[in-house]
Image 1 (cartoon, rainbow, N blue to C red):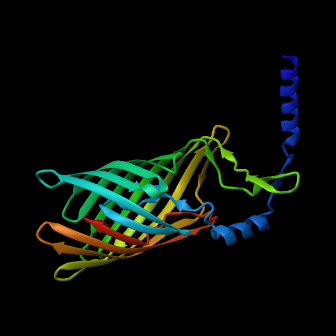
Image 2 (image 1 turned 90 degrees about the vertical axis):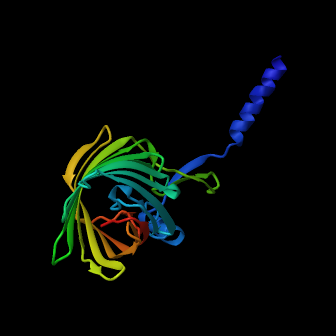
Image 3 (image 1 turned 180 degrees about the vertical axis):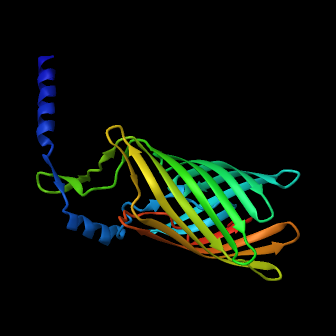
Length: 290
């Protein structure tokens, strides 16, 4: 028994001393910049789709490019109108498997001859650690001469669980200077409330079987409040603007069916750009939209 115990302790001793010593190193800001630019493309380390800025409320298949990745979002909407056609109920489902995004919502619309007002709520989860709920009021007004003008006011509450943050350039090496592993910071649970505004303008040009509507949509965050248990701040957002521009075509197929196709591009302008984007430049949809 004594020899067995001595042999066991000797094995542990040899195993401990066989492990190479490790050191923690950190890239300089310039080195990290060059690494991201060469291997990942500038900005794509933190780039992702911000689904809380989703401006779509119709059935469609959306294709987008974020950094070097292609994003495909499927939005499905089931509408039911009252007998007077004044009130409309909508069930909303949104799926993007590539980004682990799944959303479900409900909308209530009051329709008039020239005005359509919608109250909408959408709950979603994405990136495995982020949950979000959006409350929106959407007001669309059709004019006789200048086209359709509308606005959207949204309050968006986001919750983050504990998650692995973007790489800051820290990594470990052994005693010989060989790379072992990257060190990623662990971000604590937190939550944020964001209020934002959207303005939309389109001008329909009616043909025999199709209505073509050039359009522009502007989205901007207004105010944010953030807390993570140790930090609690509330502030007006720095200048930021998401601009969507393109054209939409509504094809009349039969008496009660409309095929909608859109070509829409996105440009994001921010004072402090951190690569957080929502990009859906090419859209194909069935139904009606803005």
